[in-house]
Length: 112
Image (cartoon, rainbow, N blue to C red; front, side, top):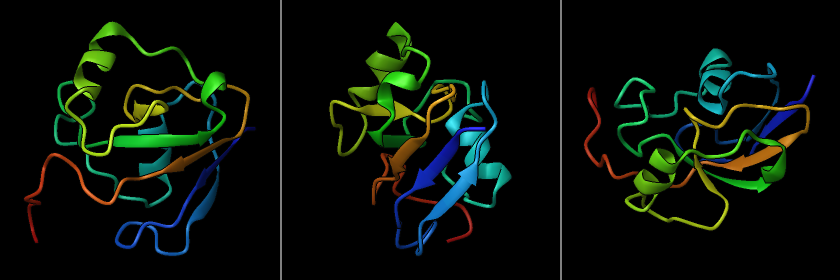
């Protein structure tokens, strides 16, 4: 079972996390299943960039990004060459290290 390692994020995961991730399941769903409440304003339909993550290790082990995902990523805050939409990046067999950016394009959150 691959591990999903989450670097510390001040609000969502202050101490970081190591998750036994399910292969073939998106990074977003793996995070949500383990209590890391990453934003996903479009309900994981690849229509926004609120679930943007930067893959620090294991990028090549993820399913390839689609053209739609690549087009949307151009709008993400803090875009880097290894950025992915976590709702679209499916876990493979490799461990993956992700960083959740400090901000998202959705600066107003419900309930805050």
